[in-house]
Amino acid sequence: MYKLTTNDRTATDVSMFPVYILSLATFIVFFQGFMVAPLLPLLSEQFGTTTRHVSFIEPSYLLGYGLFTLVYAPLSDRFGRFRIITLCLVIFSVLTLLTAYAHGINQMIFLRLLTGIGAAGIAPTTISWISDWYPYEKRGHALGIFFGNMAGGTAFGSSAGALITSLVGWQ
Image (cartoon, rainbow, N blue to C red; front, side, top):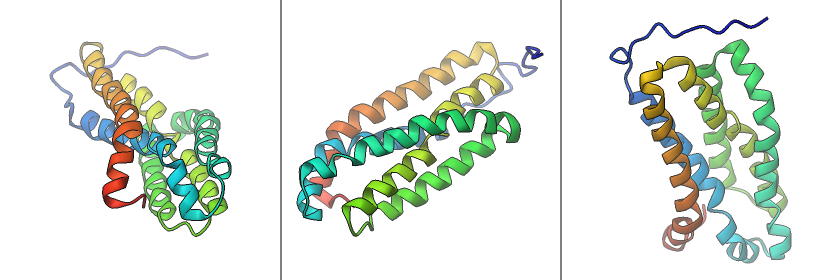
């Protein structure tokens, strides 16, 4: 039987700084997750394969992300939300870096799957962490910052990602 508990923190006791940091991390996760679609023709040329083959990059990322959100929820209940968020940020960062050094399209697809698995624990667990940590009076503000960054990452990733890639390359 679960018991609802109330937060003992008051609105003046909590800082928004952790929300800003985690929201920025979420912006980056969604930015890089959605910047791939406009790059498919470029990646097809880079890896010497068809655009159809390269197009598996995006669904592999989303498959890993979608499946592992179900795994991280009970893990965050057991080991703590912030620990899971930190672990996922490390996994996501390392695998994103490794993706830049992919030698073939199949390796890239596999790395994107793993990157999605790492990213899966960041946004959903952060939402739970905000609900656990912030009192009701500050929760809306914290969630607004968080979801604004999530939406911004999605919007800028699919548009500005192609522009940035044309300037500095896909890696």
